[in-house]
View: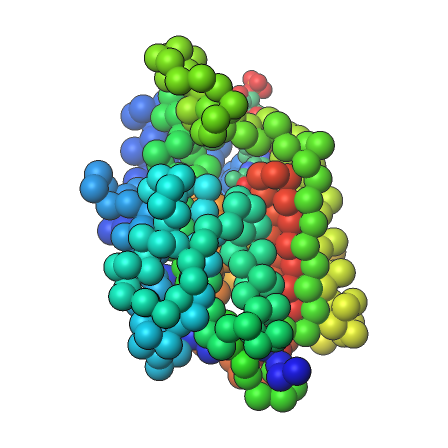
Length: 326
Ligand code: ACO
């Protein structure tokens, strides 16, 4: 089988910036607390009327343009999200229609913040076994619509945006070299939206009691993240048959600066090899690694022949790691 990798990237974030100072006006928090505990300075928030499918479509267009492909070339669209427009139709189908990607199969993937890496690995195996030639992987989130803006423990952390990549065959010696995916469902309720599915009957109480919002045990998720993020990257590296010294770049999920630092420490990656855009965007969940990848490629942070590790963790609880030769 031919090697499989990424041949184009794209991203989109809304123009609307909400700073830590803006949040001070709506909840009992302050800029210093948010910066020190998380590293976040501001986040983008989608205006009313801009939905996940809109942001995903724009990121996808940019990724296709950078890959030199048209919508008809796309065989499959995978949208990783926990904040899709609706449960049916899938956001992937809405994007397929927006793009006019009439030859593409389309489905959503639910692995929260690990979703983009889950999506890349899934796409990679389709291309590898020749079911599809070009797979569009999109991570998109409108976290602002599932956040309780009265809960300072969560509302300061998240932001909106979309990142996309086109997965296809690449020349020998390049592309995906090692991967790792996992889950620990037993810890799932530490990060949940209780009434986001069908487990609760529909009544006004769900809204009054805030059950349609994200609930998070921050300390539990923090412990899980610190334990898994470095580990999943190391596993992917091991499966690639590589060593820590071989790593040139690290693209971590952008949730919290302290979590990133601890994973980078474990990978012995100095700060200048770790991509960080968390201060500008906060945690954009499934979009985070996609946006980071696109910015890293466009800014020249990732260059040809670099060995790059990706690592994500998130609700589920889930994790995923991937090592690629760029
Ligand atoms: N502003 C000011 N004070 C705050 C805020 C805030 N926004 N939020 C909490 N505090 C207070 C708390 O009430 C607490 O006060 P107390 O000691 O009087 O009770 C104090 O600050 C310390 O709170 P901790 O929760 O101990 O703070 P910690 O250092 O653990 O940081 C944080 C909290 C940032 C949420 C951290 O636990 C974390 O990052 N966890 C991981 C979260 C994460 O990454 N989630 C996303 C997963 S990805 C996905 O799938 C969506």
